[in-house]
Image 1: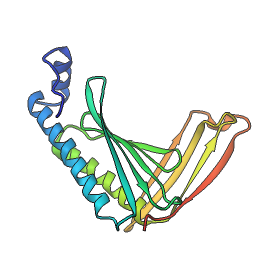
Image 2: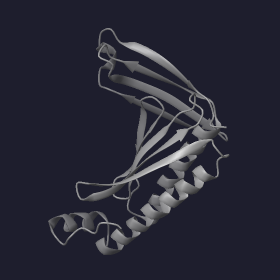
Image 3: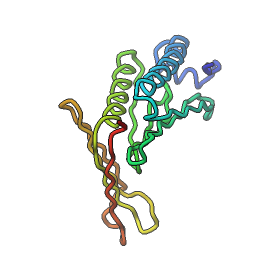
Image 4: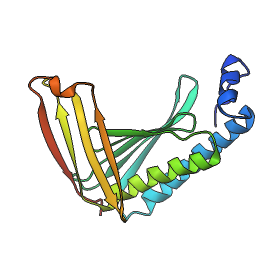
Length: 182
């Protein structure tokens, strides 16, 4: 069941972002359900015993979201964790400390592009070897992370860093090598 915001100032704000709030509510609820079905089908299409999908629906500050984790059977493969909401987009993490987000936009075309981008990333994690580099502070907090996924002649770089990360003393860098799911 999807949450439909009550008529209020919040709805006026959302309707200015999403033209036609009531239809946007329905479209986003339908998108969330379709995304979750596609995710389940994608994991089910993997060879038997390759990975498990754990899904949790949550209400966060009056906006419904879905959290999930794809856990590979191979401990040397990268987990994929994400929070998904048609209102906010897809916030995801791959393996150790590599994270990014995909803004979905308000039109059907933008929703589709973001969805395709995310499933391309999942497929690349499932079938390719890749490496990640993470730099930690002396307290163990992630300062900088880098990773590149390549598949089918296409590549996607991930890089997150704190401002002036290189000025932190006693930092350590770890390299992670991930194997395909199968």
